[in-house]
Image (cartoon, rainbow over all chains, first blue to last red; front, top):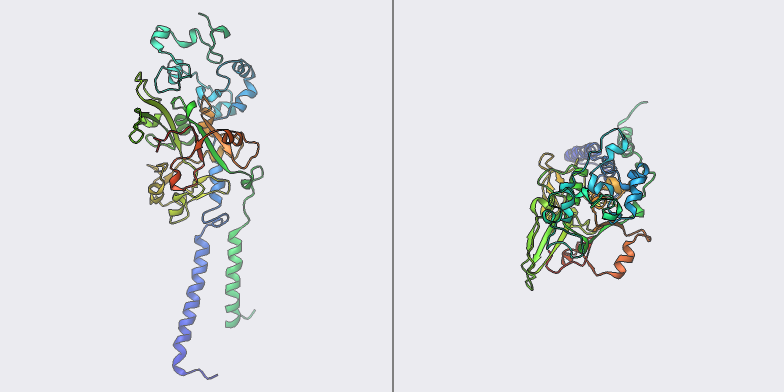
Length: 156
Length: 243
């Protein structure tokens, strides 16, 4: 086939286009993260990164492996379904290294947060007007928080 | 080897393809957790919520949520008699320190804990221009903070107001359904800290999950069902005034 003389610039253009496409593909392979598109239109590796975040709440199962006695006391009382860290706060550090002080919750703040009388709370939920109820005495004078019924360990 | 022009033209694309496959690597294996075996959701039992704010504090402690921002929060509704269209809603500091007592006996009061609904067809993931937010194969909507530009399209798109731009990282942030916990067999921090069981993590793909029995026998609702977001946070006994 005879190529017209004045068509050579078209070949140069095509060559330039090929080089451009190739460099696009090479640059793209560097820029797009390896796992992009692994599960969908996102970086698949980010799932594992998020799953690797540190845990702060150890979970009551972990607490109970050492504090079986408290779990036993709790199991027969009204607070049976209240998990340890609901009152004691995040304790993963203490669980990893028991020499770390777990701190003692302040019942003056803690008890009323749930049990202060309020018309907004569910009607069946035990609530008291703290001042009238205890005359300023701390709750744990009568109620042992792990099993709050007075018969269960507190003194009147 | 004598590289002719013709050979180079053949070799270059082949090298490009080979390089691409080297970069792609092998997918990471997660030995104890199979994403395809779960479909996460949450159940919120409104009559059990006492508005103590434990969930909000637990979430902030677990996920280093900055002050004044919330991945979960609690709202207190006060609906005066018949006036469902105009409830009085308060959420002081997200309900983090609970709510002040009230002796007002008019109308009805109740608490509504809120969080990301981990929608199956979420508007937030659809608007992301760079693929930085997505739903995982196990049904959790996450943000890839290394990839997020902070354009806040998703913050605007969420009908539930569950996203914010992190004040120091300047990228979108939201509830991860404690993905770092649920993939280790733990429950979420908010569920762990809830004293009354008003929040329960649920796995819809697990036939033994108590949620199936609950859904059979209770009237549950999702927030804004008219938005067709496929929300997966189910509310028991949700009042019609809640929006």
